[in-house]
Image 1 (cartoon, rainbow, N blue to C red):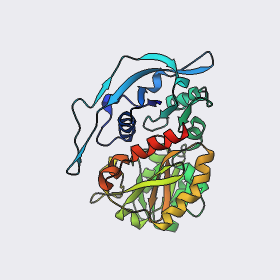
Image 2: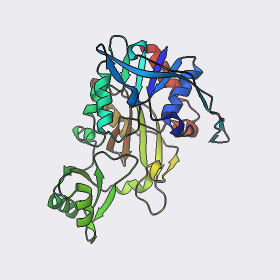
Image 3: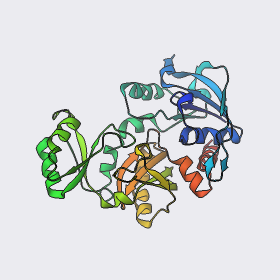
Image 4: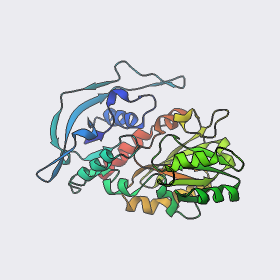
Length: 320
């Protein structure tokens, strides 16, 4: 089986943390042929999607005493060549967000992959449809009180009604740009103006969930089914649990309420071709649906002694 991974530059990835590396490592371990490329090599020729693909081998990253032991070197890349992506059985679209114009253009190129020969994960149409903040709004009953607006007075009224709120940029990642709003804060007008570009750019504002101090749970879904979870606990003095914002990973179970949320999402995710997804849940409420490059696999594997990468590869083998 041949798998192509569209990723950020390989040398910049952290093999002890990056989910793309975990997936590629599992594929190599099973003897699959793994090739990599970057978005800027994608092109359309004769009505087909092409890319400059380089074969890669990921060396095993063993877990020793609860820590990933990264070999040096941890990967080997062979000489590459331009070829049609339809030569692959599967193509993984996994550059990190934010979703830029270049990212969108890449999804348009991936529309020219022959779906009768090759499956793109996640679907380029699904990636375009699923803004990671906005996508959650369609799941009534699963999300906290939420508004999306660029209007300062609407935001202020919402904060007044709730007492506390969290404001998020719609194209943010890793907790970047998320602000805590509270009645009486003298900086609230300035924060709203900066986040909305003085009323030009809509933002998401959600009620503040006190359970955020207990952690922001990342649940990985494969074909709509939860396969693992990790709790991201904020560091002292911080309200964001994202690991990129300093949060720590902790072992956690998936609750009945969270299973209900996953069940609610599953048909829509499958409809949109979003087969590998990471959802964020705080206090039993869905806050985000991450589809571009969901992470958390290394932390789940480390804390639970499992290999989600192997599970994903076995799922792909069953599809092929």
